[in-house]
Length: 408
Image (cartoon, rainbow, N blue to C red; front, side, top):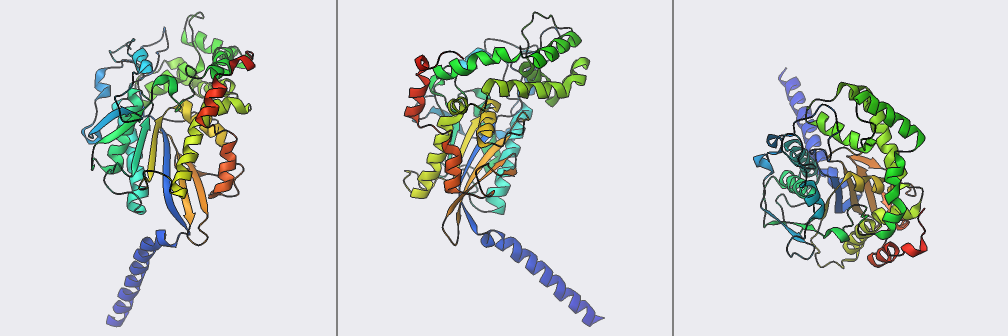
């Protein structure tokens, strides 16, 4: 019996030993070495941008917006050069209105803060615990954070960083923003005249497309909304998802329409961006794609003034992620949920020294059309993005070239 027990113990030790060995060597045996991470993420759950008129009102009370203590960090918001935060006209437009219950439209809620904290924890597990790539506490040399100049995206960035580094920081966290007319982290109709000319009118037009218009009429009737009220499926979806996420009451009629609302909102956004027209997507995501490519190139060439940089975080919107997914050729025809992320990882092959890019969306690896594999050889990835990427000068020249483009 003793001999049998000894044999059992030996095999147990061997099993445990090989398990620990394989855990320890998991990263070592991968032929790909991680070099750089770039994450574009949508903000978390928020108050709606507008309430559906004439229907059961939801109470958007201030208690829904309390920041959990574990999401607090020491941070400051600056312009791209580190100077004072620019004016925020988009935020000002939200704060000109008040929702029933006493809060402003478009504000990050406690739930939204937790969602971004959880995304930070997911990134921590992957890039600190499973693969020790990032320093476990926030280091400004390693991490760059840029947000649109809107409170919910700034707060979302803060919460993600709190989760990623568990509130441990070596120095103040700087969140960089740009002034509204120069913003490139969402399709900028105000800053790009040509984009407004090509796409601006399509928002209104989309509600008049026969199928969408018929469904819109039916849903307005079912909800008892005055037919003259301005309503569209994107607004209906926005209010519906905000209510559902926070456990607030939905008009009964809306429950039966849930899947149609989801489908029609996506149909609308596809009509608005018209992704089959290359120039539309160029003007929506071109400068952002250019930045993503420059970050990769700088890392490979060693031409950056910040050689220790390992992580770029971009706090953005659903209207950023959708044209990005369309341009990457991986849009799944579903509206991106709160806290959805597109992550680009740059790798170097340990044997060949060749570089590869891997793209994932909400944690799922994506094979980009034009790429021979999920680990996309860098030249293939650059070719795929080059179709849409626009350097600043080219972007501004195009934006101002409205005389060459009669209204379509």
